[in-house]
Image 1: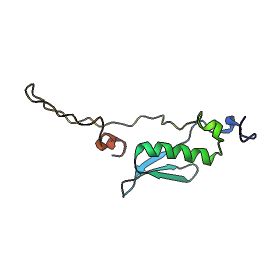
Image 2 (image 1 turned 120 degrees about the horizontal axis):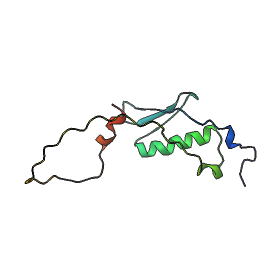
Image 3 (image 1 turned 135 degrees about the horizontal axis):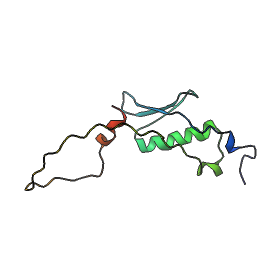
Length: 109
């Protein structure tokens, strides 16, 4: 049973615009310009959590609905062409991680 009996999921907007920028200190800042609210985080993974938390608070979404309602970007970012690698058959290519901070640069270029 919902903890807010007056909550009606059909009253939620179908789309919420989110503008994400990187602040001068390096933090990621998300703005919901239609509602004049902001949140920030140190990483994109944290920002995803905080955007959802902001939306839950803004629209007073009960806890029982929070697992079913989630912000998901609908536009894919434009990626820059990665630099070309010059690889020799005789020279191993070092591999030390699955992703780097540079992986996300195309979001904030």
